[in-house]
Image (tube, rainbow, N blue to C red; front, side, top):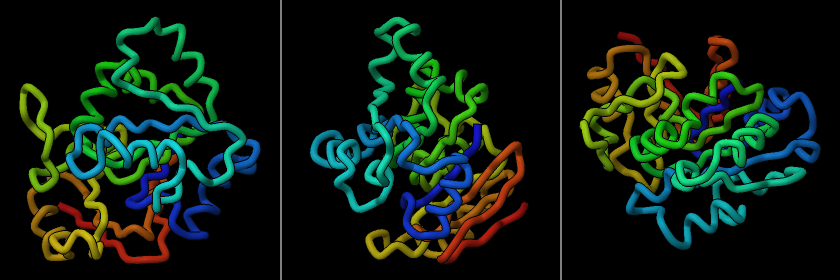
Amino acid sequence: MKFLLTSGGIKNKSIHDELIDMLGKPIADSNALCIPTAMYGHPWVGPGVKAWQFISGKEESPMVDLGWKSVGVLELTALPSIDENRWIPLVQEIDVLLVSGGDALYLCHWMRQSGLADLLPSLNSVYVGMSAGSMVMTPNIGEYFVGWTPLGGGDETLGLVDFSIFPHLNHEMLPGNTMAAAERWASKMQGPAYAIDDQTAIKVIEGEVEVVSEGHWKLFTP
C-alpha cells in the first residue's frame, strides 16, 4: 500500500499531482472508497451534517469531490456484522481509500475491530488520509490528541509508518496548534515526528518518506 498522509486533504496542486502519480492513472479512471468512521468519534464533526458533507464531497477539504470514476462508502462500524466476503473483495479491487478526519483512536479501534487493519498491508491501492485518517497510520498520537479513549487507555495507533504526525499546524480555527505546541508534543514522542499544516502531505512508499508541501512543516527527531 502507498500512503499519502495529509492534514487537510488534497489542498494544492503539488499534493494533487502527487496523488495522480501514486495512482499511476488519472483520477477520472480511478475508483475510490471513502471511510467516514473517524468523524463519529469526534464531537466537532460527527455524527450528522459533517459526516454527510464528507461522504457527498461537499466539505471544504478536497477528497471525495476530485472527479473519481466512482466513489463508494466503507463504514467500518458495520463490517463486523456482515460476512467478510461481502466487503474484502471490494476493498482489494479499489484504487484508493479516502479516510476522513475525526478521532484517530476511535478510527484505530474500528479499523482493528472490522479487520481492515489486518488487510491494509496487503493492498496495492493508495491510502489517502486526512488529519486523524493520517494519524491512525502512525505508532502513536501523543496525549495532546487523545479524545475518545479505548477500554485499555493509551494513545497507540496502527504503526504502519514509523513516525508521528501533528496536523493542522498554525490553523486559524485551532489557535492551540502552534509550532511551540508541536515542539512540546514532539518532545514526548519516542520516534520521529512531523508537524504539518494543511498545505502539506507526507508520501510513504515501501518505507521511503517524502514531504510534499506548499506550506509549512517541521521534522522533529528524538
